[in-house]
Each structure stands twice: as C-alpha cells, then as structure tokens.
Image (cartoon, rainbow, N blue to C red; front, side, top):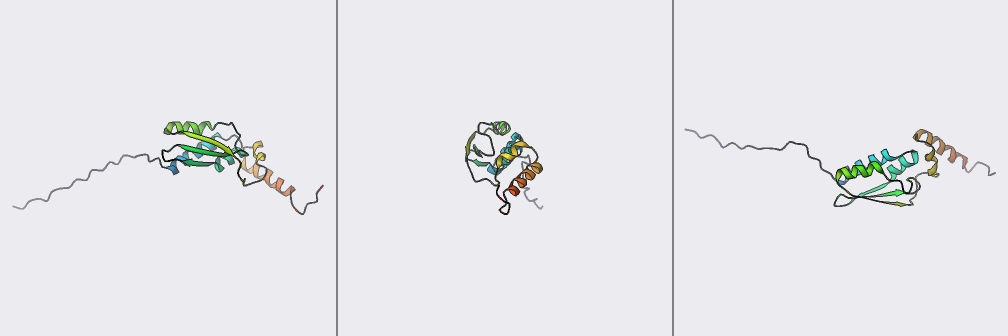
Length: 132
C-alpha cells in the first residue's frame, strides 16, 4: 500500500493592511494642506512646504512665511494627523521662493489667473523697458 504524501497547507492573511510609511504620511498631510489653502499663494505654500516625518511618525511642517500666513492653522492637516494618531509641529521661515511677488497669489484662487498676473509683473520688470 502506497502512502500519500503529507499535505502542506499555506494559510495567508489576505486582508488589506495600512502601512503608514513617511511617504504616505507626507502625501496625506500635503493633500490636506492644499485643502486648507484659501488662495493661489497658500496653495503654492502647501506644495512648497517642507514636511519631515520622524521615526515615531510625528510630523514637522516648515512653511514659507511669504506663501503661508503666520498664525494660520492648517485645520485639515491637523485633523488628518489626529486621525492617524500623530503629532504635528509647525514653523515658519524664509526660503528662496520660486517666483517674485508671492503676495500676488493672495488675490485669486485660480492658478491660471495667478500665472497671468505674475507674467505681467515680470514683463513690467524687463531690462529693455525704460525706467520711469
């Protein structure tokens, strides 16, 4: 009589698991910062903010003071952090900005309109234009 080989059963847990790594935390926080923005300058500030995730998943956000108003709480970002069970520290600093006249974006929510205003401001500063 021939003996059957022992069966090996491999049981796998196929349930989805959330892996909160620094990249995913940064993505969620930055998305919430964009949601918190009330004009084009603040939206640029949300995109330009430096977000550092520490080993314990707590977050440090550095805003540029020309793009994010000092004292403005990032309400959605703080709410996302609370849901994830992480702390958020914030600071404001001066950095080299990608464009001159960052306050131009405070007058519109539209990136298209902001770009038009910015291009006009740069054109007004052309070197070949006479100084009045």
